[in-house]
Length: 478
Image (cartoon, rainbow, N blue to C red; front, side):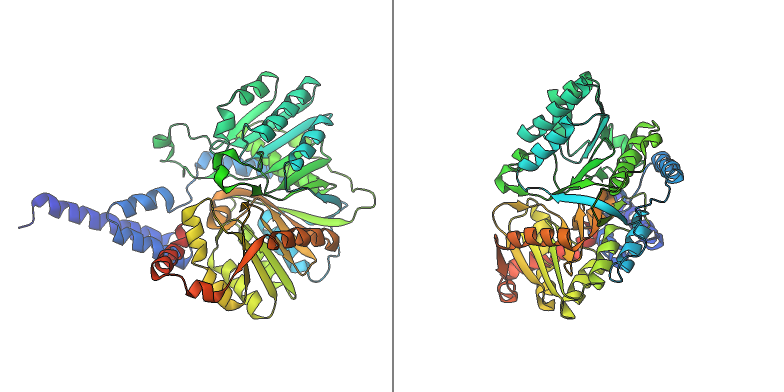
């Protein structure tokens, strides 16, 4: 006869599981595939499935913080005047892409910019240090990861020098990604000389914080703005390419661009939005128009996304670019755990005759994400995608080029974390010359990569295919 406590446990678990399943079915803005996977997890794993859903199944944010962010956006939007550099007559192929980007990020495409693609090595950090050393008014920096290594120390010392000559420096780092810097003497030294240093999403008391907000929300952006006329953005964190915290995957190969012109104001707006949300201090007066660079004609558009802005994600923007593709697409990403719409858009482009090349790292720093990505290989290859695995290090660049005429680069990976949980900043570029340079950089990745074929994937062991396909099945949860 079953003990009374077992019967009580069974009934309580059944009632709790049913309540969670009903909640899953009633949640708005949840894809059917995500609902199905969560229901399976709740039913298959007693108690732990319920706990997993309560912790990670919903994008819960502190209501006070969400309201504060909304107030900041309203404040900045009220100061947002039409720029004389707005791209008034974009080419036909770019019009739907620009419209999709604006619907997600709220910013228009601006012309009159000059952009410089920087080296993939540590020379890019030297370029940032040189720019900080020339600053006269302010320096704004936002990084997900800032390590107290050689490169991180160079930037910190440049900040200290800037403060010494009266330049106001404001720094935002993610509390988790940059925890090594925050605990180091460099953080204290920057604060001691007057730099204003803020951490995004500090954990505080996690057992209390989890009641109000998911603990895995992160600010993954990479932005530097100097004197309202120069900026840097891309995939590069403030760290050596050797990346000491995960040195066995080194070198980390990144992509960074230097930006001049009106689109600097958009990057400034993203930084100020984060700063004002985290600190409560109004710096709206710094959102000033930035003039076009004489003789420059690069059109660009910043797309900033985050979990409190559920109007869409960078996935929607990338899918729009893919459906506009007619000739070729080159995709570079370290992590491929896409939503169904993006994966379908990539495969559909290949099926209709577009030459699609995807470059991924041969070795991933996340075993789970690497295995999940492999679960998508068969579908991609069967559709005609050319799949290349970069071998000498971790390819960390995030860029997609389309038709040789437009591109998207930035901080967002092609995974659900970047689409739904992280605060990301990307930039769409509409300029054949710069896109050509980005394509050339991607071809250099191809030259250091090996192809993987459909026959090779079919030849994987049953155990490996089982692991990969199980992980791909769980992709909606990752």
